[in-house]
Length: 214
Image 1 (cartoon, rainbow, N blue to C red):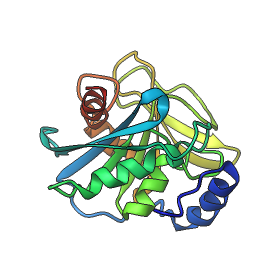
Image 2 (cartoon, rainbow, N blue to C red; image 1 turned 120 degrees about the vertical axis):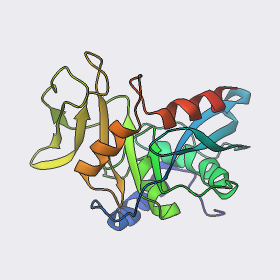
Image 3 (cartoon, rainbow, N blue to C red; image 1 turned 45 degrees about the vertical axis):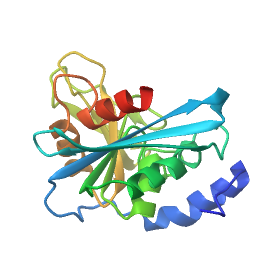
């Protein structure tokens, strides 16, 4: 990744060129291992610390974990998160002993102003089925889903459905699920719920966050 963008202008060109490669339909085999990734920053933001975990599925027990530290290559700019986080995450994936069948990202997939969030970027570069499960909305409008776990509603941008707003626990704020790569919207919802236990966020995200925070 010697040519990794360092400015917003360069990053936007990359987003616009790669987003045509995103596939928002099911193109994956049986899921037996799921990955999660989380990123933190050290040294006042100068060092990126990426944690990647692999859990078995559907049991959601830890199989593999990697932490990578790299110099931070890109500033914090809303809508361009992947350019700050992805290089270290990709390096962590290279060091795994167990290859995952699915990546669940703590971030957006196509529910992004340019339809190319972190989940899309990692999915395309890793050629891996990927979904985004974000804690907050970046773009789009929706009707509040029902109060029970499993209730969901469409996240729309005009006439386009860009994801789903999913209740992962009874009477708790929903999460925002969208295709990252090679996973359709309906499957993304089912997989996100299957990766979620007693808490609001998927176990993949929770395991990765614990590792990244140590």
